[in-house]
Image (cartoon, rainbow, N blue to C red; front, top):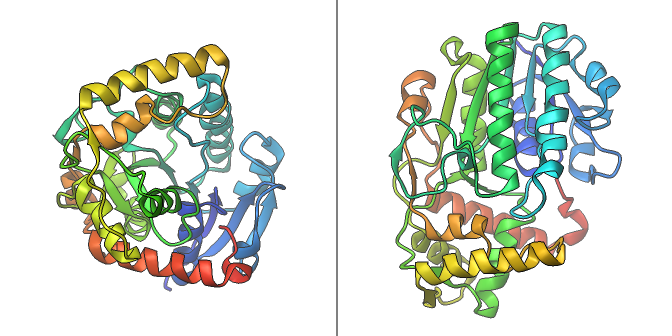
Length: 341
């Protein structure tokens, strides 16, 4: 590679971060990864990566991480569809602010922050683009914290000159996913998967390797600085399309059960209220975040990413599902070698 970079990657043991590490190494870059002491680093240990132990709240680890690096790519976040806003803020906003601060002090060349399409208002979307502002009052603590994190990152751009770019992926899936797709597969196998409404609503899905492609473009393209980009697989994929493709790959019948949207929303409101009163730390079976994922039409434009970054998803959704399921099947057969990343 003509101009290799040294890159500090947070969230490197997660789904997105591990693929960013993999791509960075493939491109000839040097990688420094922030890892928590409690993280499973089995996959990362097999890579040629310098590890810095700590988390986003550890200012000394952050200073060590950014020292002498060219780029910072932030893939770390507390995720989930249930929990107190304050708990999400601690990592996604307050600790993230520390990373922005040390990156400014280190005068890094580029800073890419991985946000979420969840920052948009919790309603049906039909081609929504980046001219639509994020929602001030999101449906759940996670997405609200991501809205605040974006605002903070852009403030560092305008007030401190940090060369930051933001990518907004939708539902991320791909090899090394150990949460969302395995849960969907389990629900399909035991026959509990249920659509909210017709299931024909758009799903804002993005294959992890397509997302990583966009992340590196955001780090490389000069016009990306100070900008925000929606990132999906491109094209329209309905929830029924995606779920049926997964069912076909694992050899089960696609789900046919559905409940009306009005009932799904009512259940979400009631179940959340009850869970909140009980102080439950476990998300209710139906909540507002899941209603948003399964019930709303989530169609977002990626024309800005195409125009400014030259982004064009390299892998189709159907092919990506096939690749992902093949990897998951392999991991199930060889659990000792799978290694959570």
